Length: 365
Ligand SMILES: O=C(O)CCC(=O)C(=O)O
View 1 (tube, rainbow, N blue to C red):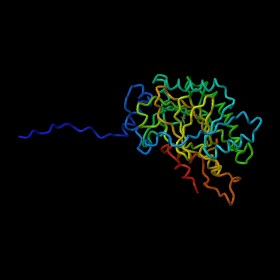
View 2 (view 1 turned 90 degrees about the horizontal axis):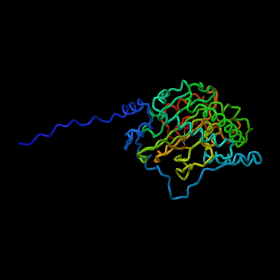
View 3 (view 1 turned 135 degrees about the vertical axis):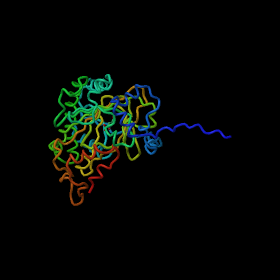
View 4 (view 1 turned 135 degrees about the horizontal axis):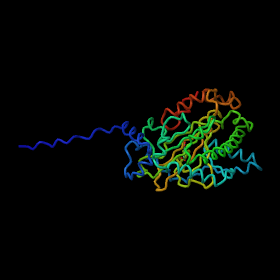
């Protein structure tokens, strides 16, 4: 007589939507997963093979560096600085600035304050764990958690700085003072850069500032804790920024990469420097003189968390029609994009996965 097989129930099929929802409901972010001591990451963080096979920069060529521009030279050689910025913005779409006049102590203290926010007890952070931005402040893991094919190993504190800033009381106390000081200084540096970028287009210094491009500011304070399987996920998926300009402060850990014609290159941390990149909006209004390029952050393999703070510059008025600037278009250089309202533009951005260039392509003529 043959023995009958033991009837073991097969495990239920993996329910990704449920797993993502349960993770979000913990309100603990990926830091909570790291703190729990897990050795393998949940499946919904695992990226597809085409992303994973391309995670380290190619080593068959010497890696170029994004340009580093000394901003203090504007006082004696403005046209040379304009040319450096024009060249960087129209090739790499990324550059660093040094001697920008922000006190080194503030660079340290704002990074420390964002780190302190993320390292508070869970009960404190839970108070602002929300996806909506009605109060101007939200702490979440993965802005695109419910739209992306795979999640990334990063938590983020988002704060609206303008045109209508978050109510001061809403900004978590642990970083309130530093965030406010940081915004003031970043706006000052951003205005200088918009003036130089405007001149680089052959326009007057005030042209971009007069469009209100430094009024709509949003800040994100990212926290990338140790990831136990950094080869299976990323810290931040490849994307372009939708706004005009981004000013980024990163700590010393590294992991930021930019796509170039030679493949992905590292943006190595440089003490005291700010990293600047062109966003889709500026690519469009400059009629592609300036380039908004893909960038991403690798998952952090280090026991020390990585902290970065990006401030995005957008026009303050979201209902106005924008498109390639008339001064930059002609019969020989026709407008490459349709006119659009910023609201429509950003709604598309926030309702999709953070990924490549599909966004600017939508507005292409
Ligand atoms: O963390 C970084 O270095 C990059 C952040 C970034 O690209 C973003 O917030 O869009």
